[in-house]
Length: 376
Image 1 (cartoon, rainbow, N blue to C red):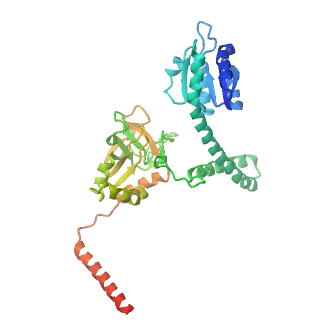
Image 2 (image 1 turned 30 degrees about the horizontal axis):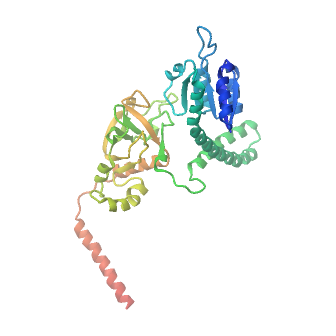
Image 3 (image 1 turned 90 degrees about the horizontal axis):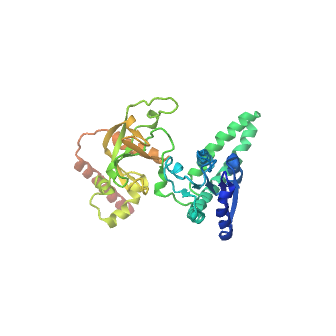
């Protein structure tokens, strides 16, 4: 059953839509509420989709756009798909970026049918959200179930118990969500990305793109290599550095040609990639990055081609370099290890490897001869 909540200051204005849905959609539950009760009904009903009016006093000369506050409440605290159904949907569309979970429809003669069509388009998103929520809810239940006994055994103070359950439960939930699924399904390569970034601070491993670059051009991308602890700028802190060390990116073809896999045929390369570059996460001085369609192309980072970028030139918007994504742990640590493995090699003098090779081969040959003699 699809639960719909209409938020409307004049309930009669949505009666044509409700009546149409009841006639043609038997698996839909409709409820209409006023703006004054909207937030409480969103919390208690937990609707699958909200059909939201924007204007209070729509028949007056200067109606108020009170629906924007309700929209923000839904979006930030009880997220679900939205249908903006108003005489002035442009009020919403001019303020917010387009989103696949939001449809805007202007009220009019044919608008009830348009609303029903929009609901049909949003159904797949509702199903995806429901499935994801069930997975999170199951993990949450396991986390709370397992940490609560310890909190009650260790503390008698109610405040300490609450704080312990909250903190321990949060960490346990994160660990449960990070692991493989219970049916041992492997992670998709792109699951290492946190897109958009979760933290407001620049992190080691952040994938950066030139603001004027295209998403499918690897040369427009950089990967941050400066330790995250030196880049903290939140909560009044000041970064310890003025510039971020970053690796330049290139196409996978160019990246492979920077390694000993250069010139290898596609058939042989297909067999070699999983055991070299992909399983280790890097190969020699090259890190492969998977495609995140529309955001990040299939590409490689060259750990020998570096540049400095001013901290002030990096941001999620309105900066020369945009933070497209962060890298989740443990992949972030892998980026650090790959760079250290490349940059921290001791510089050694040239040596006579041929003589050393002959010495080793001679030793191996003597061992083979000795083993044969002993077996006789």
